[in-house]
Amino acid sequence: MNISLVLGGGGARGYAHIGIIEELKSQGFEIKSIAGTSMGAVIGGLEACGKLDNYKKWVTSLDFLDIFRFLKSPFKLDGNKIFKKVKELTKNDYKIEDLPIKFTAVATDLTKKREVWFQKGDLFKAMQASSSIPGVFDPVILNKRILVDGGVLNLMPIAPVMSDLNDLIVAVDLYAPERELAFKLSKEATDTQNILKNIWSKIFTEKENTVNQSIDLMMDVIYRYRKAEYIADIQVDVPKNIADWYEFHKAPTLIEIGKYLAREAIEKAKKRGILKIQNGKLKKGDLV
Image 1 (cartoon, rainbow, N blue to C red):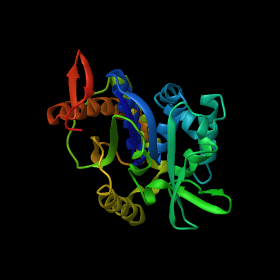
Image 2 (cartoon, helix red, strand yellow):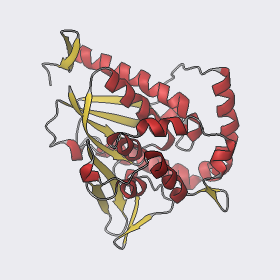
Image 3 (cartoon, rainbow, N blue to C red):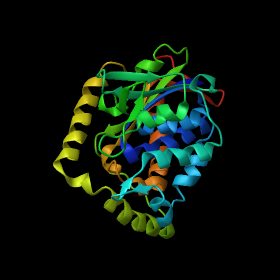
């Protein structure tokens, strides 16, 4: 079954996208097009160029010293260093128009006060622009335009895939209502996360201030208005309380949660008639 996949923004919660993609593919969905914003653009771009596995191995094996290699004074993340590493992981330069999967990265143009859809040109520049969280990463300057995180205007960009001739649109909402999910990691994984948590907390010292709380509220409200514009056939709801946007140390947990939530969304789609089982395989349901 061919699908268009829409990956929303939400900082560290975007690691759930990795597990969602893995689960969708394992159940027979073939991803033909992807649109993403912020972390969704990063994960979506890596899947589109076939290098998501390399990235997953890296983010789930980061240690104390690795994180310090991506800092700049005064104890802040350096977006340029991070994307240099991402390019090293892919071992190639990519043009969006040449990717085997159709891809759109959504950024925000502060100069012209509007969305920008990257559907051609340098893949990594598009991913970096789309994920340049204001106040955390430097903006991307391109053709005299100031580009920042796509989530400023559009946290779940369904519009770019509306014209694709695929069976279904599957969208991932990283701002879904809070709920409790019971997940346990091994003691080794838990110990590693606790060590890294202390580092990330020092990097994101601004996480508690009113500016960042206001930005989070603004993005939440904007998203609730924007998502009414277009509706996906299947929506994977990722509760916003599973991780704060800055908790990047939770990658292993969030990936597993993504798999669980994808399975849950698929089962709901079956009950609603969006999906059906035919000859032992998932097919588009009669209600689509």
